[in-house]
Amino acid sequence: MNQPNHQLRSARERTESPHARGESLSRRELAELVNAAVSSTTGRTVVIDDHYIGKLERGVIRWPQENYRAALRAILRVPSDAELGFRRPRRPHPSPADETIPSAALTAPGTAPPSGFLLAEAADQQLRSTTTPAGNIPADLALLEEWSAMLRRELLMQGAATLTALTHLESYLSALDADPATKVAVLRSMITAQRRREGLMPAPGLAGIVVEHMRLLRAVGEHAREPRAQRLAAEALSEGYGFLAWLAWDMWEIGSAQRYYHAAVRMARQSQHPTLTAYMLGSTAVFTAKSGNPHRALDLIHQARKSLPAHTQDTIEAWLYSTSAAAHASAQQADETWRYLDMAHEATTRIRVDDNPPWPWIMRFDDQKLAGYRLVAAVDLHNPTVALRSAPLATKVQVHSAQHALNLLAQADAHAMNRDYDQSAAIALTALDAASTKTSQRVIRAAWKTRQALPVTSRDESVQRLDDKLRNLDPLDI
Image: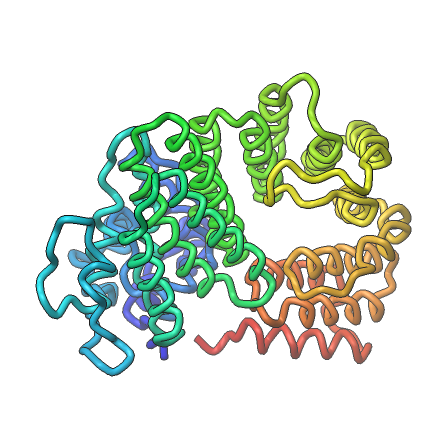
């Protein structure tokens, strides 16, 4: 169980706010100061927020990355990490769950590990080894540094079954007498399989598994010498980074999501696959727009369209027109939004039943998916009439996923615009239930946003139930 970091919280509370004399520094203010400090010392743009600071204070993250620790020491005026309650996580003592991993499973062919090579030590060494550049594959797994302790802990909590499966996979790849392209195909199919589990388990646990698959994939890519195998490895890495970005966004780790999306685009370009590059640029554009930078999102959409070949599949056209509409809606450009949605509708009508998407990460696009984009765009443009007209189709299929829950919350927002507060709260409750298997922080934050559109005090039973649900999902006793 996580132990609250009282030292960090006390240090923040005894530091005066730069905006309100006599008041304590808020989590949001501290996050903004850390972002500015890291940017000024490293030149790297980071976007941690109050939610991340909350994780530090709750003890969910006990050892943030070095740049964050240095910034926090300077801002809170303490000489050491220990005075902020930061301590490097200890490796667990051997237990029945911490099996000794076979040597062949965690070492490169031709090397011999020391005896008694335990799980936590192996995970530490392997994660460190992936941060060294080799060949043309950039060291993007270094981005996992701030996640590594948390994700390893999640894997340990899942027990021996998950760990054994990963060990067997690595042993299988080490023993597999096949070319790198075949090994890439094996790992690519494994990551795709994890993508299909996205609605069935919380993002931290799933991210821990994907990280390990990505580590293996990167190792295979480093040893590939043929251009074809290198391109296939780059494609698979791009897809994996895109998935990790989505999971980071679901966890509301916005800085990590931003960097993973950037890595996905870089690897897509290295793969020389124009459709993949467009997909990753479009996905990054939607994330960027929803993260508060719609004008940068429009630039990314323009790059995505330029990267596509002259003639492409109608599925790709429908999807990219829809993402373009989403970016324009975030920028409050109504005319362009509706124009792109109309173009997406025309492309959707051209998609034949037997059309296959170009690869598994572009799913089939149909009227229901288009209705979801129309619903969210209408809410962004404060047009509840169009939103509610689109909602029945957009939320027709009852599935347990973050995206379905977000569509429901958009519908709830539209009802709130019409001052139908009881119905809004009832739908928001349904949305939280739809994402109950994931405990998605992105969904929870969207639900809080819906709640802010409702009266502060209300006698409606649904509103009161929503308050209770949100308090249980986001407790304040920290």
